[in-house]
Length: 327
Image (tube, rainbow, N blue to C red; front, side):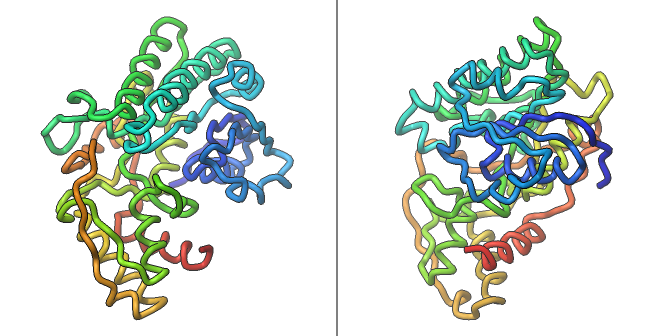
């Protein structure tokens, strides 16, 4: 999809992370000036090291929990893509204070800094975890339940703050509720690695992946290029009805974890046939997990002109190839 976005100065917070670094690349390819703010708590220098030679790219090593860092980073910016956060439901259950400090305190700092700098539009990473214990499928933006984790609470509070700031200070706000994003540069290592890169890493090593539960939990897995499209569209959309609201960002289909592992084994076995014979192990369900997730993307299609190009299978083929060449 061709999106006309060039010649702007855009701050990407968390720009060395998985999603943020992909956004930095995409924005630079369209001849924008990009500022990356990251403290490298979870972001990786190798994700952006190749961008350092681009005269339109600036890295500011700083922390969104420090207001002065936020003010420095947002100076002169037309737009903000706020991706910085401490992700992971299990991490937030283990350490709710740090998750709150980063995800709520840091978010508020960025809002204040953006307000004071006269930023036109603030687009932020929201989360499907906001739907909490709501049972209905597909998930529709204006029907949510009670949060099931500290992480989910922080992401819902972000939406509340964004709504207040749009009404009180006139900043244009768009929240993007990401559903299980995956793709190139997503870290397969660490205690809180997302399921797809974790399983890929294990299968490539000949290890059996462990599924939490019986494998019948389902998710709306969303390839990174669909997320990039949604962020770009959020910056350029001019329809007044499209701003100061939230959108589901997903493919609009769901697959079980058993399906997922089956696809991964099939696609990875094209590089190493032995992978197809690796058995899967099963463990207990994970605390704070919801059984099923499926997004309605009708609102994003109607108001943002969102048109996701990659299904789970199409995205996995791209991701598996990247991991095989880069791990």
